Length: 217
Figure 1 (cartoon, rainbow, N blue to C red):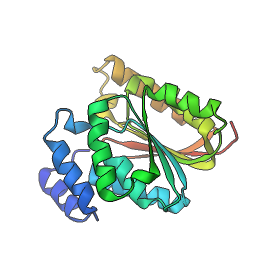
Figure 2 (tube, rainbow, N blue to C red):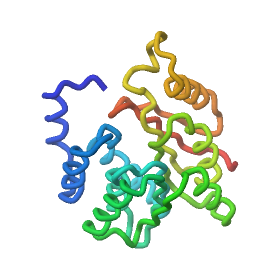
Figure 3 (cartoon, rainbow, N blue to C red):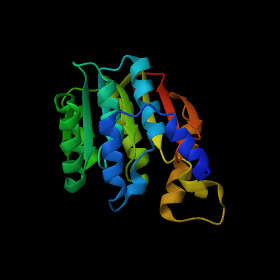
Figure 4 (cartoon, rainbow, N blue to C red):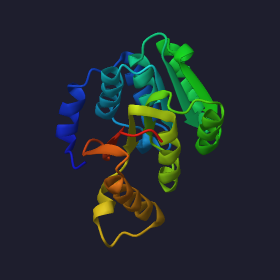
């Protein structure tokens, strides 16, 4: 948020970026919608959070071309599993290519479907309270539904991380009232008042809120 090009380049120079992640970032930069990719600093934070948790089972809602999911998969142990939910087949093909290139395909379970349907299927399959970590970077108008489903899937003490909570600063501008901005404002208010989790809104990238689940849902 608000970083000058000079400051961003300095930040990028101080991120430990795996060579395959760098290749993926560079390929994605030439694609339509490349602004949807998380920054290297964000991906590094996600990977560290997963490592601190000792995460074995993770979920990502909204994969795009796979930068954040690849960063987390690289941080997982060999026995780790990451469920990657994405509806865009073209983007998934790019992601799968880089999972393979980085040698983590065996850790990633790709779900090519609507994310809400995939999450409900996991719950119906008896996987509630069995995941350590989740990251959401998908349809902003669906954030509340994704969050409630993930609260059922993530264990007590586990983390749910939500991207784009500052929405390019639009959430703080009272003159901006499009549906996506209103959805994110309402969602941020819900998190602030939700006693089922501890939260920390972090001004990295486009803003990320880290939620730690406190009670069994």
